[in-house]
Length: 191
Image (cartoon, rainbow, N blue to C red; front, side, top):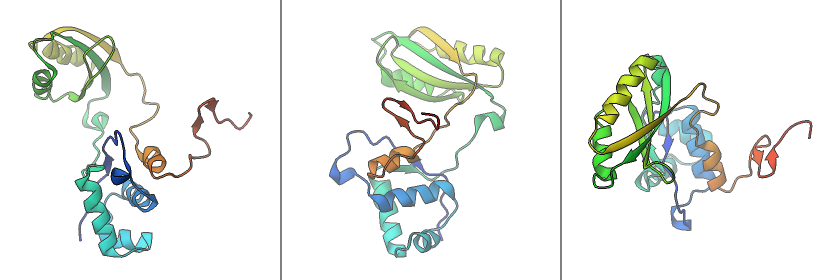
């Protein structure tokens, strides 16, 4: 029996019919999100399909990088890193993003780094034990060759945790949840 951890969904980008997902894929992903340690056989029983179908779907979703990981989702605050900050870096163009990403990857508190458009060149999500320690992490980032300037924003509270299931359902063509935000504003019971 295979044990699966939390399912993380890769960015779907420019999805085509060949790389799209259907309702069964979405139900499988939702089940694995809700119960990350469930086995393939139990998935097949709950979804009402053959074990081979579930395994083939998982293999296909993994091969196409729709599902990119079956590992546990770790909460940094529970590890003693309750401070989260977003740091925008302006880089010297001669250094390049790949080189900078490699350097940032050596700093354990840098959880993510993305190349971005706008005022900066890279956006990083960083964690620390305290604000003073955050300063030390930022100093290590600034010591990296190629960083011209950094702008930091400290997160006060997480309002929407990292999630992918609404996106999975949308990609599978399922209707939006009743309390979902509409283009003209949020759904509200008193509207």
